[in-house]
Image 1 (tube, rainbow, N blue to C red):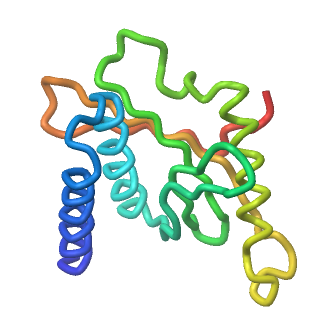
Image 2 (image 1 turned 135 degrees about the horizontal axis):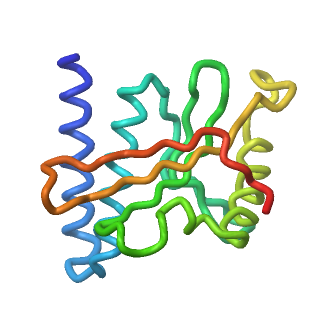
Length: 153
């Protein structure tokens, strides 16, 4: 448990340093989105996911996968949606047709990048969506995890 706390603190410190050196005037929605991805990362780790990548891009296509991790023997590609209010459409509804198409493309690139020595066949995988809500009254965000969200729309 102590090692997890040290790791979490180190990652948050490094993220804070990166934010300060990258852009001091980033838009609020980008700052809250980055914060939500960080909180989701540690939330999933607490649930037993073994995280292997954050913000996985592909050089050949548009889009990225926010988080990639293993939930037991299933490879999970996770889209994180962060909201500071519940007055707009639900965060999970923001994963629209274009976003799903982009994720499928990046997914194919990621699966093809896995070493054939360890993965002669593509592993079993699923697409998850996690919403992170920051309510002003609450000290900590709330999470809602939608496992096995459909990639087709």
